[in-house]
Length: 105
Image 1 (tube, rainbow, N blue to C red):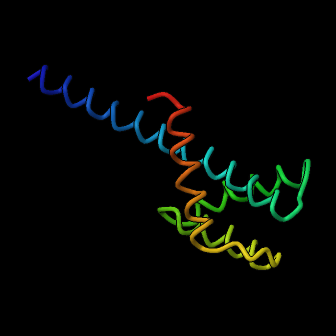
Image 2: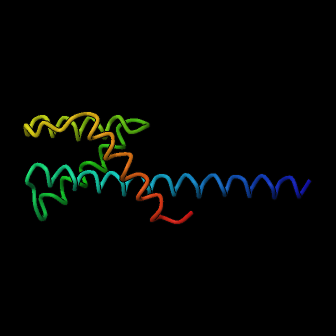
């Protein structure tokens, strides 16, 4: 019975650490995505950093990536950048892959 309890605790620990990693990956991706969008909008320095932080926070509105996508796409549209949905989603995917390689398991 002890082995079963130990195994259960090990599995819980694994899920917790994987969940924490995914949170870090998503937050880092969202920051980089925000900096990318800030550059397109001509934001620099602290203003760009603040915008990137807002992008990270926007991911806390609902599960998944759509809240971040809507923020970035909406801000780019309001700026008049003409950046397509495809380009934003492609950048999101590229950055996710890049960050997953940077943050160890």
